[in-house]
Length: 245
Length: 322
Ligand SMILES: Cc1cc2nc3c(=O)[nH]c(=O)nc-3n(C[C@H](O)[C@H](O)[C@H](O)COP(=O)(O)OP(=O)(O)OC[C@H]3O[C@@H](n4cnc5c(N)ncnc54)[C@H](O)[C@@H]3O)c2cc1C
Ligand SMILES: Cc1cc2nc3c(=O)[nH]c(=O)nc-3n(C[C@H](O)[C@H](O)[C@H](O)COP(=O)(O)OP(=O)(O)OC[C@H]3O[C@@H](n4cnc5c(N)ncnc54)[C@H](O)[C@@H]3O)c2cc1C
Figure 1 (tube, each protein chain N blue to C red):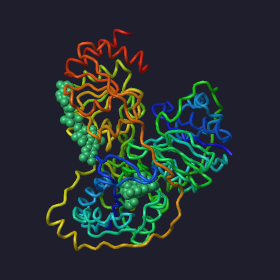
Figure 2: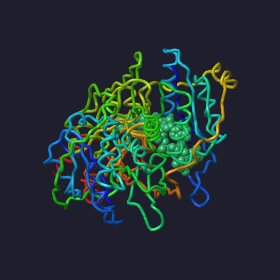
Figure 3: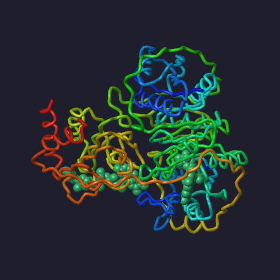
Figure 4: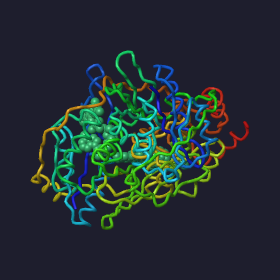
């Protein structure tokens, strides 16, 4: 059994988002990068499955050299080896093509991703890879059990969930509560230093989209406070000023 | 040339977000001369209901009533939509962002060789390339994105355009697509879904509770308020983590991203990860006993006070204006 987990290298969820160069570049100044939170759920579930099924676990990132500490962290959490496709991740299609190429070479039984990246929030790389490989892609998956070659999953839908069954190989875009985030321990951190991290070059440079410019939302005005003993005032404001009632 | 809009339905009705997607398609066609706006619906639904897509701006609705398509099997829906897209000679596919929509759109991007942009918040600018504004960094920023391909897929965020209500009912054309059995290999064995409720991702008003509500037994008061407002209920992450509320009500960075006209937050501190899921709300009301709670900085209106006193009073005050 071979498992692949694809991880993003994204700004920590508390980061202040700012841009430079006339709003054309993300400002990394003071920003800490982490494994995408959804990818972290995928990784945590993969580590559990690896132990349960005696599987091998590879992590993959499409990114420049700066993402290696993030891959090392994934190795510390429990992946056996890592692959970095050495390129700036130009857009979702570009990333999906790189993942597809690696997957074709290595024939993974299960590919886990996050439901979406928390930088570009596309929620599409898993579906694109699934279509290119001709295998199912299910997202957002909140429960995933493997029994033989059958995969039993719960997928979140608006207002509830849907239970599914499919056969391996497949791709799942994961979210909580599929597993609890895992924090690397000292032994994991030590062993991660010597685990293989292979760097490969991208296969196909084509893209479908290009970001021209970034924009920040307009700043919010000051809050209008209403006395707690005068809630009627709030109702009036909502009705007459905001006109939302 | 035409614009195809993929519409979803639940409990016998077209989803409101899908009707908005139809209106987006119509506004897009009016703006760039995109031709007919055709909607496609899959699975069992009454054709009288489907006609209503016309009111939102569609000139025709194509419907495959195949019951196997009623449940949203991702690959089967992608195959069906691709067939209709090619049959009608569309060059743009519009759909509402949703659990199923996202998954289907991604596969279609490959099938149709189309550039896909998600979380679209406005109509494209086409004077110099095909530029689409989308929300990124979980609502903390926007990106002007150019699509370089001839075929385009736009997954539209709630409130990107106004819902049109002045169109006329449109004709429904029944089709019977031939879908490869392999696309049904993933089987949906059951669903577990709230019925008759206003769904959080689609709600115009949301009432959310946090850890300040102290326990699940106190949600009745938020539900009363929600009922008075015609709102859906949501919660913060710890609340769903502890199991006070179901996971699908969890709002924020790692939960549902809402875009209502009014978001009422009760006993929620306003951590940056929670705000990430609500920052597309038009108006935010915060009720918190701590005047220093960070949520007040993101709010339009606020009450500093004990939720257990304020909420029942607010519900009464709302009743009084009816
Ligand atoms: C500093 C910086 C700047 C960036 N600028 C841009 C930009 O301008 N335009 C742009 O399109 N992208 C940019 N990216 C790349 C971006 O992080 C995504 O990798 C890519 O855009 C796909 O995003 P998505 O939202 O469609 O992914 P989604 O479809 O939301 O991702 C779903 C899942 O796919 C997997 N996945 C996604 N991306 C990768 C990856 N790179 N490596 C491995 N697995 C992955 C993960 O499991 C993820 O959870 C930038 C990244 C960095 C670090
Ligand atoms: C990677 C990551 C992702 C995350 N994703 C999310 C997410 O998607 N959504 C999310 O919500 N959180 C998320 N979090 C958690 C987030 O950081 C906060 O811990 C969480 O939002 C706090 O929930 P809360 O406001 O309900 O609880 P608290 O922070 O404990 O706040 C409770 C509030 O209730 C107020 N209060 C108490 N009693 C009363 C009363 N009687 N009347 C009125 N007010 C009262 C208090 O003053 C306080 O402000 C994430 C964290 C991380 C690290």
